[in-house]
Image (cartoon, rainbow, N blue to C red):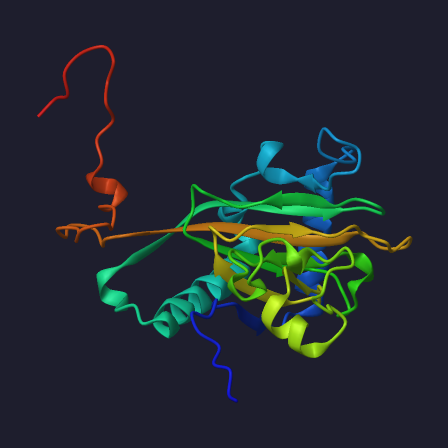
Length: 240
């Protein structure tokens, strides 16, 4: 019997070759932006710049080489999915740093305002100690009986490779300095706890959005370019 893997999820992994001095500069910049803050409102949650007013990191000149690299590989990702690149334009909506100290994690969530998520790790040696990105399966179609893939002593033997391949409820990706990940923003994800006592996990996240190119008539289901949007004023009619 042959089992076919249908409807795959596209996760892009790129190991960027970062200059050590530039990497050190980025890490220092992220720590300076965090300042004296230790976490988000919940003590066990990592500090994320997006809810602390640091959400336009891509506009800082020091990060220009990193933004260029993400833009290049994001376009490659779209091409790999079958997009005709001249018919779409990719935008950075947000870009923010994340610092996860010891015992800090990030809960399960997704980014409904964006279309494509990107993460670049500034630290990590490929081990899960400093906390993994956890990607959750949108639908466990192969568990047959809903809930069996969670475990708790059920008949699915999660320790065996067939169950891990066909019925894994999530996949963990360990951080590595310079690793760039790209995946659909609608995918639920989380970050497991940083169990390292010596090193914080530093990363930079991007929210990317797709629209039609500027000056074109947008096809159905693709938003027009933001330059063609008009604000809905509340103090009078729109001007022509």
